[in-house]
Image (cartoon, rainbow, N blue to C red; front, side, top):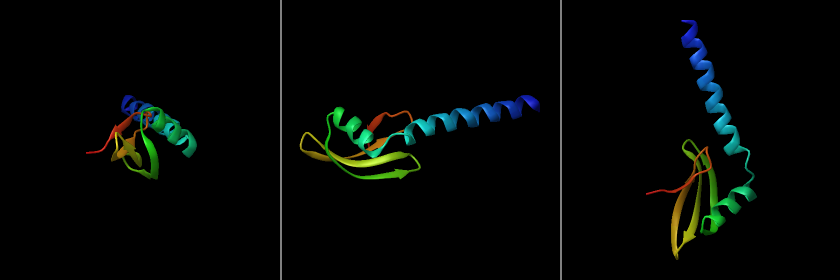
Length: 77
């Protein structure tokens, strides 16, 4: 039982650590990171359960992005 409690505590701390690093980014830093990845016209930034979402333009097409807790940028389908 003690091992189970310890595991849960470690898991919660790991999750909290990952989330705090993503939420530590300011909006300007987030836009800079997205722009550095080749996107432009970043707008409509929102916090959601899956991460931070935003609209942007790449290669002339508007895309919806998700930036996860590790800072990875993914296009939403």
